[in-house]
Image (cartoon, rainbow, N blue to C red; front, side, top):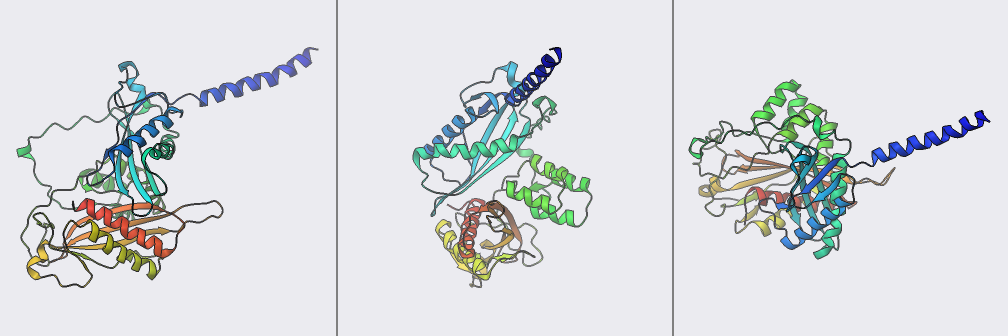
Length: 401
């Protein structure tokens, strides 16, 4: 009889342990999650009403998640007693386009409330969204929350993160000096240094002391990992504040080999924007039809976005007097992986590197990088999309109106 009682007790104890562990897994990560109103990156034209609907949808979906005991809107306040175990989320729309289907890209940063320590970042690439307008943007909140949940999965407890670094002392505006170097690091710069076997600590120091325009989207991070960039370097890239684009200053034309200040003076508009044919990086397999479609789409779209500046084809003659105030655009495909359905449906990825050069001496003005998820489309359709996306990035970088 006693043996039977013991045998009957063991399954009950195992069941109790399983229930206990499951309950532990169901515990929210944080005390509170406050969601700030979403903002728009400079040059992004996203209707405020629809942005509000998207914000409402994200709040609603987060409220059903297990990230926090309570989800608060922008008007709420996290109690001081909970600040060290609570998170505030800030989101910004970095790209928006409704040519054909809707494309919207957003970046999110999550900070510890007590000291605004950056905990993690997330990116939502909403591409080829159909029948989305007005209040239907609320449903898109589900897609956003999925990406936030992925980014926060497996995070350490907030108490394990060190305090946020102290803010730099304010510097009077009159004391601000221009950087001594015009170099801006990109993802390609990091890969180039890693390939050259530059020591890891040197690369990290370079990241910490040099302006950057890193693409930190999920596909871009996956590409860096595939190219052998270490996690320590990627973390340094994530921590480095993104350098805002410097205002364009007038410079005199210096001729080939003599111009270190690569900028143009446009006084309301540039003299001309010359579009070069799209190219592909080494070992990137794309068809000529893709590259032709990219080039034609880039010309057409940029002509719509150019704000009065003439957009000319490759090889067009630009008067010598206007060459110092004209820009040459070169687009290179650095990553291209088509979507597939086997063994599981997987979206493709594509990364662009966009070079902006001064016409008279081909001095580099800026380098732009961005990555996108690709739907299962033909090469010509994907090339057209690449040209359109490149045009939107150029519009933002050149402040075209």
